[in-house]
Amino acid sequence: MLACMGLMFTVLASCVESKKVAGKSGAELWADNCQRCHNIPSPVTFNSEQWKTLGMHMQSRALLTHNEREKVVAFLQSQAH
Amino acid sequence: MAQDSLAEATPDASASLTVPESSESHFMVVGLVTFGFVNQNTTTTLGGIKTTDKTNSLGDADRFELSPMFLWRHGNNMLIEFEPSYNGSTIGVNWADVSYFIAPGFIARAGYLTLPFGIYTKRLAAGWINKLASDPIGVDMAGSDFGVELEGGFPLGSMKWSYDVSLSNGFQLNNYGTISGVGIVAANNGKTFCGRLALLPFANSSLEVGVSALYGSLAAAPGATFTNTDITNTKGPSVNMYAADINFVKNINPIQLNIKGQYSMSAVNTMNYVNPTDSTQKYSFTNNVSSAFAQVSVRPVQAQNKVLKNLELAYRYVTYQSPQNSTWGQNYTESDIALDYWLSWRTVVKVAYENINASGTSSVALTGTQGTSLVNRMIIQFSTEF
Image 1 (cartoon, chains in turn purple, cyan):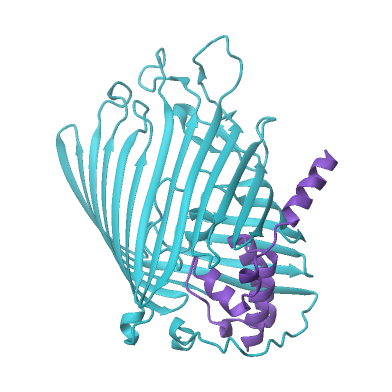
Image 2 (cartoon, chains in turn blue, orange; image 1 turned 45 degrees about the vertical axis):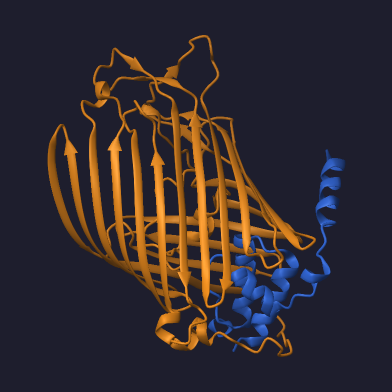
């Protein structure tokens, strides 16, 4: 059972981005992903700490990849007040 | 308010990223409020007699909502979410859970969860996200439950995919064949498994397609009197649900095209129920429920005119069928149209019209009559995230 779970985790974790996707900036990912559900949020709406917390909430809602969340949150934090 | 409008949300994408260090824990409150006005005309035909009822409700009786959401981040891996909700008559809870971000692509959650069934309930139901004024009927058939969940998203070359699975206490079967959640104390040993798989085939994430499934054994509600149709079968009833959803958002200069849809169905084993008008008699029916909606909206986001670019026109068609020959069967269709004006990226005023046709398909032998109803609503609704 543990071996199966280990194998599953290994397979899932081996999913990789293409160069095209890996080269996307946080700003591009912010535009691509937020509008899937709602309007694109203004980065000045929340401060840096709030964006980090909201990034976790939004990752679990929209099922962003780990890299997407990291890049989007970094971008929003860089633009936040 | 205009300061954070979509039009002005255009920061310098080439700016260097200077990310401040983060604190160990952080607490914040966001949330949403939705209220409005509804003028409703209802024409009911029952036993050949037609009656008309007109109401004007401030606060918008069916759609009022005030839901603060409390988020507490503990370190980099733990998030606690709690969203109570007041709907004008009761205070409920939309979700109350703790999530642990185990590793990239693996988020574990426990508590009171929105089950991963379809796309609408978990992502699109908030008034400031919903393009129309109402929620589609029947779309929330899985609802929320107490349980555990594992979810995540992964890249797949230029595509990506996501999974979301849960194990929860599940449902009980009520008299007359409806189902409802058992709550925090399970009524039997059975658990309900629910899951959704989704694929986003394009690198810009413009298209998402998802499929969902749910299976659970059903506990008998307290006082329930139903029995198996086959008396030699001692196995209890169960429910299967399936859903398929699609979400497509694409900017085609000068408009943004937004298409969303979901089909959901639920099937419960056929059982014998006690006739409500004659307790010495039993009846059964095929206990299937289906619900579907399709919506399209367009917004001229690249228009030069500031008023025009904040307008969005939306249309939705909804269909819902509950079991024929039950006590609660109906065929239901709804057409909704709305003109939305976005005051900011998260604040909207909607002017909507809804037309609903419903006809009863319940057994005349059980309920005495079958009726039809025609509802026309005009709604002015305000919704914002705060």
